[in-house]
Image (cartoon, rainbow, N blue to C red; front, side, top):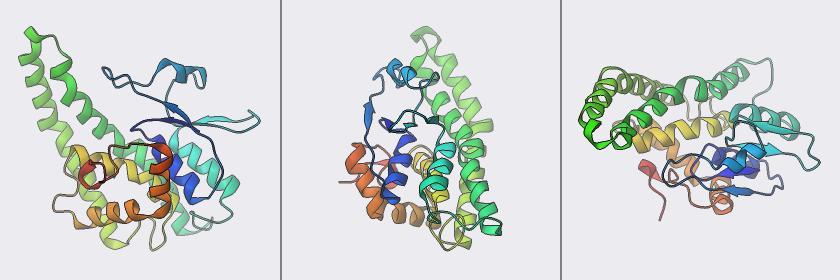
Length: 228
């Protein structure tokens, strides 16, 4: 397991703990100035992103959280953390598994980028960058983020977990967008079901074991702050 600090790879550590699989961790640290992954990750995968998993004999090198989760569930799940195939629940499972990165994360990433834009702009042009950032966030990004956060709240008001009454790997996949939105966009403000979901996942023993193995994780507590 190739693990980058404060990244989506925390979900894979958590899944490995839920499945009680043995694994080793190769740790990587972000560049403190750019917050980008180190170039050493490109030796593992050409895009230099995390998470990436490799098997013990080197036959599998796999990136992308959703693909990794499907691979691990299909190979080692033995019916755990996923509904039975050919059921309505399985259709919802696949939806949330891919929605997390395909729909939920892009507006959150845009919010992060445009929020950083003024500080990354040379000082003489910073006022213009601030106006651009504010306009983009007010006019497009923030309404989109709110649309998704309200969607989560409504979905979780219908069942405890995203796929229904049973915890699944879809909840693991959805954890990062909700944690990121809690830290950056006030996802828990007036959204009691989002707050309850985050509290439930953070209380899971496997989640806590993954934190212990993976080290500091900025989104581990309510509101995106590390737990005490």
